[in-house]
Length: 632
Image 1 (tube, rainbow, N blue to C red):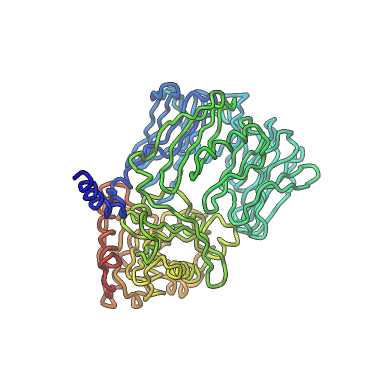
Image 2 (image 1 turned 135 degrees about the vertical axis):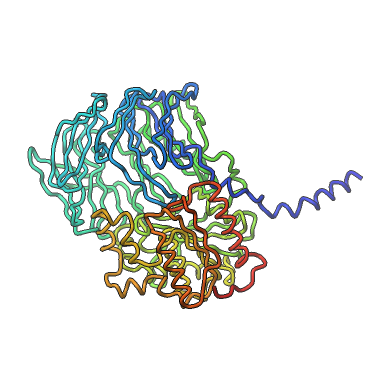
């Protein structure tokens, strides 16, 4: 009898083992419990950025008992960023402005300082125009900051009263200074208003030009000095290739190659606790990793050991305590949102601090695999494919999800709530870093300039055909979905390839290139110059490369999503697209507009409603029981 019961239980349980639990939509879009953490110089306190709906708060926590000793809130749409410990008791921070989930953050006006308990608050007028150069620990009341106003200035800033004293100026219109370990000004590097990249070396009281390139050209800029103050670590991007790291002898100009990936530029650096030795360079090529450039340094050995302690995960390190005893790190993977740890070198113990999304169970998430796809012209395209957990990885419904930007951002390996939601519902998700994406060198990014709607779209097409050829994607069940530029790409793809897709979703997308001339960034010279660089130059080309003018070719159902308060991509883009569809007797399957949202929804319930409808849309057209989609 007992054997029979066990057999019955086994038969009941077996079908369930092939399927992952359907995780509630809200679990993917609830605010994480933290976004960034930073450690005080003495290692006794931690500053934590805590997102909450329409704002980001800042909390200061005592390590010993995890008690909150200070909490800061600057109100709706305000977000704490660039939080600096200027000494053991005082913080300096930038508060940015952001209204939508996919929007860029803008710095408005001032920088702020405060003691960790909230006393001694200081508003530094125009402080957001300053950038910190050096924290000058020998003088805890001051720091070195830079500001560019027609030319570049280096100031000493008193963090208690906000007063500044001029230290140096340089002939660079948008420059960044480098001082050596004696706080002596040695280099300035940056861009001129016409886009040229320049680097100068300080020789006595004069500046000597050591590098100059055309707009968006080669890069060559300093990162920091070595322990002897004689050689400088330089980031070098020549011939449009990804940047590498060299060690430059200031006197002889001889270079020693230290680190290069060849595919991507560095996206982070790790310095010794005394800030005199570059220990490691962070690359996000496929699965992120550290290249240890000072492997014999005693701190490097500790860091390298910690990365091995978390197999299958990425470990990002933050600034250590000044004495090198305490090391702050964030650990994450494709199936796990970041967790924060504090490692004590003296005891050899790692203390778990907090998880950003502890309600997410890694064993229920789906793996994200790095891929390389060859475009039709032979160009390698790097990206990721996420296969639903417990599936056989074959003949799956596919959602291709082009990232926004498009120039500068890129898709990276790590926990992505949106991707994991789709995979949890049985969809494979393809993310490709099409030409024009950032991180792969100036030449790769420049290949996308003025190629919106043409070659950049071909890269998406070629990646879908790769997924079909690999047997991953069912050729009759492919949809494309994207937000911002990704929304543009989603609509332009079904214009150019009307028979490849079964449906498309455009979320806060650009559908008329000329409508973007009313966007918020056009009020800045940098924004206007950006469009000059990347947009098709003539009105006829912009029309040809705008999906709103190609609607007669669209054969598949369309879901459109927008926030009425969007100033980054004005909602008139969507209204114009709908009017163009109407002219040829078509209309969207559905339109979702939220009156109080901007460039991407932030409200949790709005997101639950959105993704409920989006999943129903995908289920209808590429789900298990989907039939061939009809024209919109």
